[in-house]
Length: 212
Length: 115
Image 1 (cartoon, each protein chain N blue to C red):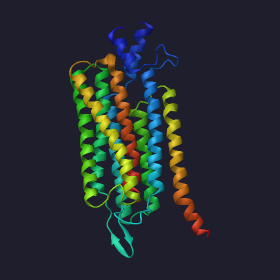
Image 2 (tube, rainbow over the protein chains, first blue to last red):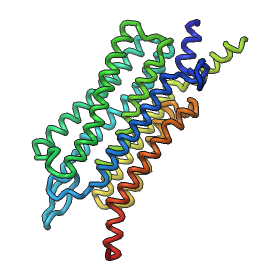
Image 3 (cartoon, helix red, strand yellow):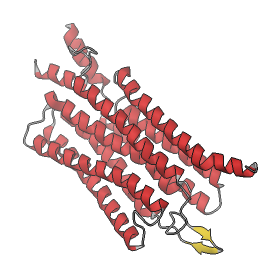
Image 4 (tube, one colour):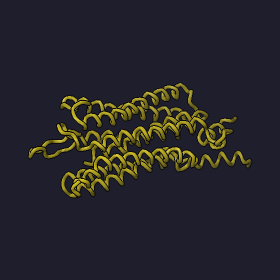
């Protein structure tokens, strides 16, 4: 297979000799993403079902308890910043894929690294947030908000951590010249994972942080 | 021009450009800013809680579909992938709506009706 053909197959594996005519790895990965939708669906449902049912503080948003005004614990400016970083890392990811498909190795490596770097900043913000909450007295056992909040955002953070490791591995491979246009599907699948993690945050951010 | 060459040229043109991806990124940022403004508006009493929730929900849905369609390439890829993703995504949404209704909405309705 020529390089040009290989690049085309990597970018659009719609002409492969499989039962569906589609690349099996991509099919399997979309199926995995589908199952992840159900996982996060159940976690989000658990959070929403128990929203506002905590009998003791700390509470997510400011509210009046027994005639007293209580401040919310969520840090909206910090989370807005980390959301911005995660969205930007998604932009970096599509650019990395585009450069990989075009065989521009140096730029592909750079954008892959920037994607992982963005994910690391997001994780740093989450670690800071969790540590702050812990010092404020919000643990997994404190109240329903603590249990469901840590469960939902913690699972998402674990996915981001896996994504960062995945991307750093690809960055190293790309820097060593082991990911060319013929292997662009590897980057595309990593991109699918990363964008999915972003999409989940797009749902979590308003539901947990913005909507009271 | 052979059919193979035409295919390669077609596929090369089928790829969105970097500029396109950056524009989508800009739209995502804009929508996020609007979401945060919705939150601020609700906090300062400009919007009611329900209006803010609706606005933020619609903006969030727009961001969701933009990322899935353009960054995850579902708009350009096989419809099979769309089906594989959307079916469980809708199932997950049903679980969220169902549990939220059962735990949050129905008890309130029941209480207001005196049950």
